[in-house]
Length: 97
Image (tube, rainbow, N blue to C red; front, side):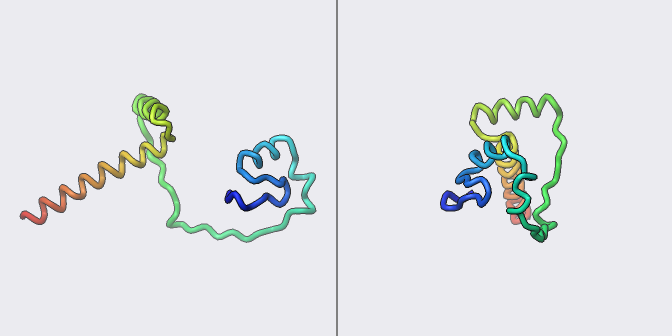
């Protein structure tokens, strides 16, 4: 949530403040302040799930904690590095052939 915005119901300026507010309040008490919205989702923005062996996931999570990043972020960074490395090697081999 941008810092210059304030939540219309909770008056929160951060997601943490908003979470704290809704932990102790009910949306039912604010029904008159809500309104229906139409949402459209972009199917191309969809994420794919990949299963990871439990032992590998535990190791990945441990490394992520040490680096102070989420496991998801670490996995995406490492996968991107490996795919980029593979793609650049493939291009080099094809250009010399």
